[in-house]
Length: 217
Image 1 (cartoon, rainbow, N blue to C red):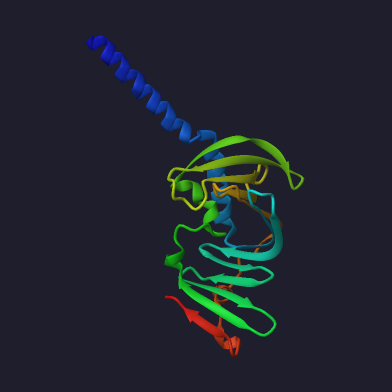
Image 2: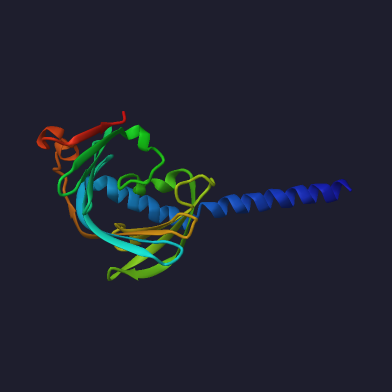
């Protein structure tokens, strides 16, 4: 009886060990580490991007914009809004024909959200990952790495990263919210911009007379 119990214990141990190792695919980690190192070595970049959203019913939306990223700082421009993040403060600027508004938050209030800077480190905690294959993406061979959230309350339960096999650059990604919604981002015209000044990521309210300021800090 003791031998059966011992065998069962060993079996569970081996099974658990297999499951844990399967959550962190070593091949995927090599690809992800190379992508992260490439991003850190860039010391800043600018790009155009396409953003699409499709909900469970098939209804979708498409937008294009511009992005600049340097370390923890980023500046994101969409048709109806701009987001500035200098690593400490986040400004969300919205304007219409006769109305201007900026909402100010501490960057720490945005923790847990997916941003243009932390997408490169998303895999480091809170997600398991595996290399699921290769595909042609933007005319390049991309390695597709799937991230699966380890907790139910994660903003996105699944993320797929398309990483250039030749250069380790992140070409785009897809995010799944668990409710049937899919968010897709694709980079275009990626340019290295190491000389982006810190002021580029700061929104100066003095340059916008009459703007309504909503300070939530």
